[in-house]
Image (cartoon, rainbow, N blue to C red; front, side, top):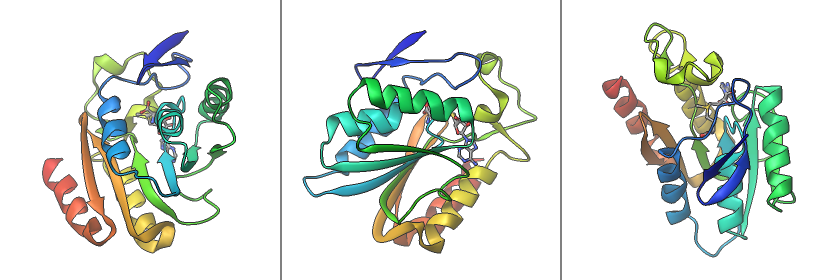
Length: 188
Ligand SMILES: C[S@@+](CC[C@H](N)C(=O)[O-])C[C@H]1O[C@@H](n2cnc3c(N)ncnc32)[C@H](O)[C@@H]1O
């Protein structure tokens, strides 16, 4: 199967890997606004099909991206999308938890991770893998742990983080991570 995301034709794997949604194009736009002419290292955390990583790399030749996912099928699909769209030299797809697989700190972290509470089943996502959509408790554990990892040195001083939450991009610079955490808790 194929889908169009940011005007790119991407392979999908329904039922095995989360299919990219139009709302995520706004996250890509928000990231593109933060990328200027200087070389930049970016992490796309929970890359799924590789949609965000590939869209950024196609649009910005000066970025190098580390795309991570815990799902082996997602890693395979993201690699193949990066290869087919000619950016596999700058999109490194690695299997692992959050920012753990990164070889060095990055300047920008972009993420669309699971954030729906397991208790709040949404039939709109019935065709997606559960662990791509739902997280235990209030659902915010993955984002809390990602913010912790940024604070613990995986995000460069002066870097920024962009999260998708309920279809909206949420952003913080590295000195505003606590504020973003509070914003998420209030929105939950
Ligand atoms: C909502 S999907 C988003 C996929 C893609 N970023 C997109 O926007 O289309 C969330 C993805 O995060 C991955 N994921 C969940 N927990 C993760 C973790 N702890 N570390 C890395 N990836 C994770 C899932 O396997 C899934 O591919």
